[in-house]
Length: 570
Ligand code: C2O
Ligand code: CU
Ligand code: CU
Image (tube, rainbow, N blue to C red; front, side, top):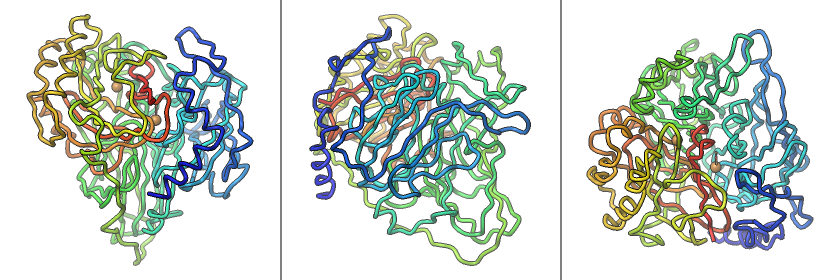
């Protein structure tokens, strides 16, 4: 604890960070607005006062790689060049289009020089890391082709798996789809003391779906249907490889999983019914392992899995599959789906393999699963700035508009509920507002005072599941909007949050029952899957840094459609 505040203080005296205090909405700083109202800032330069422990160049560029047999595939890719720091900071995934693994230690000061060698603008976001607003990869910091952007921050996160990926305005999904994404691991002493499987026994598993044409080239489209449901490929890639297979010895492994798909949600389960032993999620280790028959993994979410192959026969196989589930897509869209362009052979919610584990060596010794993994500093109800008045995150969806709190993304459009005092801990509520753009009336009813005041009346932090709360919303949604309701992985930038409660509308329980045992609510999260009819309460700290921090759907097609907003921490 005192460690953190020490480093925080030290960090805040740093001049590159001193800027933060003034840059809530940096309309000054030579801001030139583009046509979407997004300012175009001068790229940050290296600060002479910042003394990095680790420094590397990160390049975004086009390349071609072998993915399928035959022709190479054109991709966009991150590559990195270490300039200072331990050599294991950057480790490649051989032959993959994914960016290299970035391995950082808590407490390190890091400088990254992002070089944009693409033909369009980009910016990189450190998904999961708690960094100053001007280091977070907000789209207003996007740099043009040929430019360089310098990031400087201290790693204050606990150990965990994070993601780095582009975040340019309305163009995130496409850049991620063509290959720009990678995993970033933070290590700390608490984790090291556990001596979990490491080195060759710790395996990153980045799951993505892609669509290829006859020439082995990636296909991406943004027609109305794809944008509304999200874009789905018909081929599963793990670490950039089709038919991914890992060869293991009969012992325990640590699988670090990440859903890097733009939209596809997985219901993970071993094919022989072996339960999944979860030891961590987005924000690092759980306090103790959770044993699940299956686990849901939505875009942006991570999963730390203890996979013990002890006692398995040499030559035996185990397959990680996505299991059948219901309710993720709008009912209307699934009906439309048949008529649309790619009648996908890998339908959402169908069953299909993701990767195969092959036991190739029998050994007798294996590490044992620790019963106690970590200590999480949970925030208590009495720390909340707003115990009776949760900050709403109201989801509304329609073919024309994907909105949060009734509004599409717009720069410098901060509403009162989106202003948050720095160094506070907030209760928040994510729910389906069913407003859409189906008309001003429903919009008002859905996310206007009706829904927002509900929180006041309900009050408290009860874990009680009260299905009746959504009455108003359900009336306003009518038959039409219910057809549009779908699942959304909602992501909040900045610090990780804890999940307080989840409840489901009466009438939506049957689809929900096919996924509800797959949520891990006992860890720190930065992305949470919100099913149709579901309402989720979270507690999130907003500490240390002022400025704009985004919240958005991590269905990246939805994000680009505007299902994204800013919180202004002030
Ligand atoms: Cu991983 Cu704002 O996103
Ligand atoms: Cu993020
Ligand atoms: Cu969404």
